[in-house]
Every structure is written in C-alpha cells, then in structure tokens.
Amino acid sequence: MSHAPDSADIIVVGGTGDLAMRKLLPALHHRDRAGQLADDTRIFAVSRAGLDHAGYRDKVTAELRAVAGGWSNDPASPDHRFLTRLHHITLDVTDPEGWGDLVDLLGPPDHRIRVLYLACAPRLFGPVSVRARDNGLVDERSRVVLEKPLGHDLTSARRINDEVGAVFTEDQIFRIDHYLGKETVQNLLVLRFANSLFEPLWNATGIDHVQISVAESVGAGNRADYYDGSGALRDMVQNHLLQLLCLVAMEPPAGLDRDDVRDEKLKVLRALAPISGEDVHRHTVRGQYGPGLVDGTAVPGYRAELEQAGAEPSGPSGTETFVALRAEVQNWRWAGVPFYLRTGKRMDRRASEIVVQFRPVPHSVFPQLDGATAPPNRLVLRLQPDEGVRLHLAAKHPGPGGIRLHPAALDLSFADTFNQRLPDAYERLLMDVLRGNPTLFMRRDEIEAAWTWVEPILDAWRGTPRGPRPYPAGTSGPVAATALIERDGRTWHGDEGE
Ligand code: BG6
Image (cartoon, rainbow, N blue to C red; front, side, top):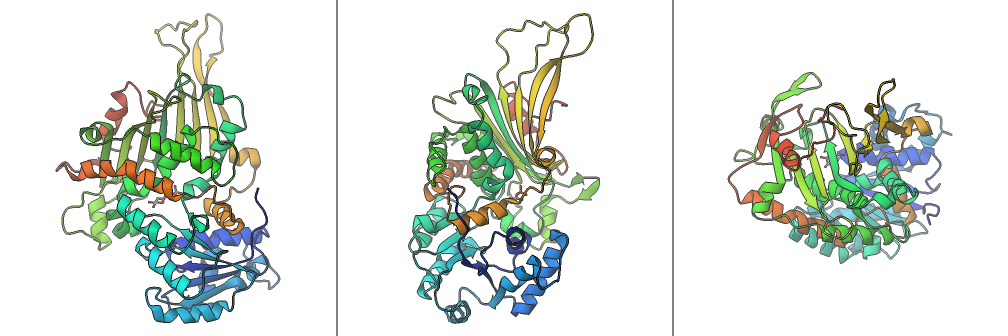
C-alpha cells in the first residue's frame, strides 16, 4: 500500500542537465502544486555550473514558466514555495575535495531521508555512491535513483550494480525505466487484471501475435554523442520495449507488493527464446536514417547530424537508429505466438502502441462477396500521443441485401474520459521513490536478464560487415522490417491502411 511521501532531501547530481530541467524539476513542481511534497522537503542540485542558489532558482523559474502554465510570483503561492526548496551547489563529483560544501549545506542528519538522484553519466554511479557514503550522506533510510542507460552490455551493467550495491542495499536502489511510469502502461495492468474480459483469451489459443512499436519523429539530435555509442537496441529495446513485452506476457501477479510484479516480469525475460548467430539476421532488422522529410521539413541523415553536432566518429557510424525484431516467449501460455518489436528515430510520426491481435473466428458464417472473412479482433493500447485503448471489432454495414461486414472500433480516450491532465511518468516515479515503493523500478536481476537476451544480437551485428539498412527520414523504416513480419503472413498495424 502507498503511504504519504517521506520528508526528504533530494540531491540531484546533474542538477542543471537536460533531464533535470525537462523532466525532474517540472515533475516535482507539479507534485508540489498538488500538495504532495512534505513541507520540509528540500532539493539540492549538484552541478559544475557555478551558480548560486538565486541563479539556480532563476534558471528553474525560466524553465517552469515555459511549461507549467499559470505561474505565480506571490510569496504565498505553491510556485514560490517550490523555488524556496531549491538549492544549488557547484561541485565536481569526481573530486574528493568539494563534497564538504554539500555536507555543510545539508546540515546534520535529521528526520528527512536522503535521496541521491544520479542524473549523470553511468560510469559515475559507482564512484558517486562511494563518495556519498564516505561523506556520511548514506544511512539505512537513504535511497539512490539510477537513470538509464545502466551499462552498455551485461559486464558493464554488472559492474555498476556491484559498485552501487556495495553502498546501498537492493531495496534502497531505484532503477528508473520511465516507460513503467506512463499512464497507459499502468493501464495495461488494470486492463488485464481488473477486467475479466480479456484474461481467458490472453494466451496462444486466443492471441495470434503481439506488436510493440515505439516510433519517434525526432532524430538523435543534441544527444548524438551518447546515442552514437548506444543505438536503438540498447537505448530503447533492452529497457522500454522489453518492459512493455513483460507486462503484456507476464502471469497475473499475486498482488502489487514490491516483488510481486517484478518476479513475474523476470520469468518472462528468462523465457525469451535466445536470438543468436545466424538467427539474428533472420529475426532482426537494423536501420539508419538518411536525409528525408519529417512533417514537411527537410532533415539531414543521421551521419550528417552527427557531424553537425561535432560528434563524428572516426569511421562511418554503424549505429542503428531503427530496430525491428521477432521475439518468442517460450512457455505454455505463449508457445508459438510471435512478439514483433520495432522502434526508430526519424520515423513518419511519433506513435507508441501495443497491438494485441486476436485469432480469427474458427468458422465464418458471413461469407463475403469477395471471399474475405471478418478481420480478427485487435486491441490497441496507445501509449502516446492520444493515450487510450481501442478495440477493433467486426460490425454489420448498414443496409438491406445480405450482411456486409465492416471493421469498427470501440474507443476509450483517457483524455476525454477523465478530462484531466495526464501526469508525466516522472511524477509518478518520483513520488514512488519518496514513498519507498519500488514496484515500478527495475530490479538488478531484471536488468541483467534483459542484457543477457540482448547481448547475442549485438555480438552478431558486430560480427558482420553488413551495416544497418538505410531508410529515408520520415518513413516507417527499412523495407526489410516490413518483410520481417510479412514473411509470417502478417502486417504492421497502421500499414494496412486503417
Ligand atoms: C529515452 C531514450 O529513454 O526514451 C530516448 O534514451 C528516447 O532516446 C526516449 O527518445 C523516449 O521517451 P518518450 O517518453 O518520449 O517516449
């Protein structure tokens, strides 16, 4: 059960960075406006920016004014109260010398818990945890939050987990996958386990296949340096898409206690059929965007974008900006049901969805003139934009003279139904950290199981001179991704002109 958020000192390492400015501070601000931060909670931004408290508050004010709407300078307002919580400390976290200033600013330990939010490079997760402990900032009530990427392969993920695990217990470590904080993703749990309608069909007998697509129209942009060393498989599939797959495929958990859901997700990760060696070339497609048109605007290709960002690698970059793959979960429930995953940057639109395609009726009593049968039912969970659920059914086309079937949909739009702002994923996740609820965070064994599955794919890609397949920006990816699913007699949702 959730309880009131603890009073906390939240120390954000990387406090002036993109994540802090775009996500963390707006999320904390929204929750503060909603009255959910304890009165004496304080926020300490750590960075090398050389700002004083006032300078930092000005910087944050400028950001929040742009996104929060209805900003008030009134000293009695929640906006003003939020600013007074903010402090900035200039510190190079790798330098053992500067930490004393942070310790002084925090003051002696009191009733507040300490939350160390590491919005910095993953190679610093271990060293910063150690420094925090050596400076007396860690006790058994402290929590640490780790942002992805957690390593770039199994070995580096284990190393980070070992280093951080030497300072914090597993219960104190909150590894963020922000997809788990998205409203629609949590709605997937509710849809499956609070409605009796779907679960009897939720298996290989009722379901033909599942598609999970996360398409972005943005490019690698100003994160080119990080992205070029990562690529879509590490950046999106190893974490976000596999987590979504787990929530679709897992068994009903016994409850929602900290390990109920995580235990079930882990079983799915461990049941994924390995894709390695020659199978990698059959079951995966990687692509890289070239120049093209996105929303009517001409955009450069990935390599040109790298150059513009000054991040050109020594050779031609073989980094994939698109992945499609065919996965299978080897257990009784899912035997023979393919899970098609695809994600890419600079696609024709921004759209993330989970598509559950049910099996066709066993016998059609409505023969169609052209021999076609009713399109099978399809459940589409739309993560973004326009969050909602759509159930595709067959209906009768109005009119006399026989029965003509026509596809129709039952639509549940969350925005229309609940008529309120849908909170950002970080709002939910940060409050869970402050409440000490790790259910929606990834456990060490989950991260390592995900890397274990992904690594042979990376190895096989590395072992071939064939690089990623080109696709023009503003399209739905390389044609080989279409072939990947069409080989099985299926099509990507949205590609069939619906
Ligand atoms: C991040 C990836 O984890 O997720 C980014 O590093 C990606 O490359 C982002 O753009 C997508 O998140 P969202 O919430 O915009 O779908």
